[in-house]
Image (cartoon, rainbow, N blue to C red; front, side):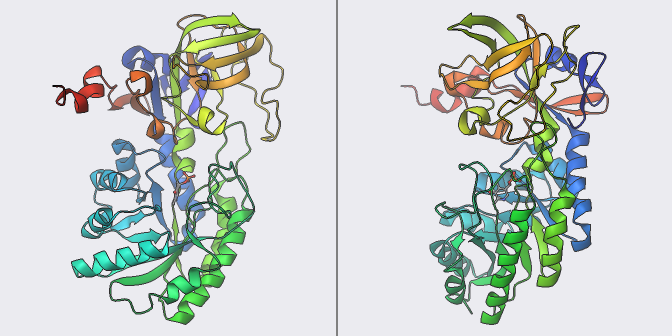
Amino acid sequence: MDHFDYRDRTLFCEDVPVPELAEKYGTPLYVYSEAALVANLNEVQTAFRDANPVICYSVKANGNLSICRLMGQHGSGFDVTSQGEFQRALKAGPAAAKVVFAGVGKTDSEIEFALKNGVFLFDVESEQELHAIGAVAQKLGVKADVALRVNPDLPPKTHVKTDTSVKGVKFGLDIETIVDVAKGVVGHPGLSVVGLHMHLGSPILKADPYRMGAEKGLGLIKQFRAQGHDIKYLNMGGGFGINYRKDEAKPASAFADVILPVVKESGCQLILEPGRFIVGNAAVLLSRVVFTKSTGGKHYVIQDAAMNDLIRPTLYGSFHRIWPVAPAAGVPVTPDVNGDPDDPQPFREMPNCFKQDVVGPVCESGDYLAKDRPLPGLTRGDLLAVFSAGAYGMTMSSNYNSRCRAAEVLVSGRTHRLIRRRETFADLVACEEDCLT
Ligand SMILES: *Cc1c(COP(=O)(O)O)cnc(C)c1O
């Protein structure tokens, strides 16, 4: 738990006791550690420093403006998948020179926006998109720098909904036809094909897919160059896994070990797009127990965070550690999680615990954060920490059931500040109220 640990039976984020944050800002609350964010970015920068890479933080993992600004201040560029994310990157600071733009459905107006705002590279996902970018660039009288995104067709490596480099997903250009697509734009007046891109999926717990992907990429780069394209960049995307359970993930250096030799051989500059690795374990979602009940042979903890705040368990069956912020006497101080990610029994036997479903107030049976999870007995008002909630948490949140989105707080040492205020009912209806007749 990066920068989140228990002292005297109370959870701290850096040097701040977490209950203090719940008191001040209310729940549900996303709590981020600035030290963890910077340390995780630094781990990637250090592991890959021999290649002097362009690191582009993936805004879709967590687009909070203060977090984006922090990334920019520490030398990161940005990976975006929409104009909205591009605008977040621009607001974060003067790093626009390092915005890479991926996504299968960029519209002409998004392409134009990106070109006018100094996009560093488009990651191109189809032949039609390539020609659309060329046409918009010509209209503006500029040349667009593009990297072709390949689907390297590797064996399955993560959850089916988040694997982006197997046959049968919408991402990238087929490895069988990408060379022909590249051939079709040799000498195009609006396009410079300067890179190869791949993003394998996420989260990835082994280095091997990166080695296989990079090696396939090297073969393609040679063919593009033979066609006359001046290939300068190899973009290996994001996807580095994190410890959701215990220690199932790899350090950044394990990925560097397999990627760096290929980058060296290619003579390209390396680009990386880490998201989850930087922000995933830099936050907890804090919630408060509203009620408990036992029904149909099951025990439920009903707390005030729901699928609209953190949808990963509902959407992907994802595992998040959950533990009381202040465990009672006789209860272990931290969740003792098995290290094996394939172990169907996520927890060891734990004293004074029994299996409970952690659910929210939303009117869906799919509204849960954990099922059959050994937890100690809880009472109304107890605080829970949902760990590893920083990536694809707040960015995937919604207003379903007319719930106001949670607030976000950034902790640094002994200090803390709001980086997104809690939504109000006025925010919820702002787009409708003027339309009332
Ligand atoms: C989502 C995404 C990323 C980031 O993935 P993480 O698992 O958060 O590191 C990087 N590149 C592209 C193209 C993406 O779509």
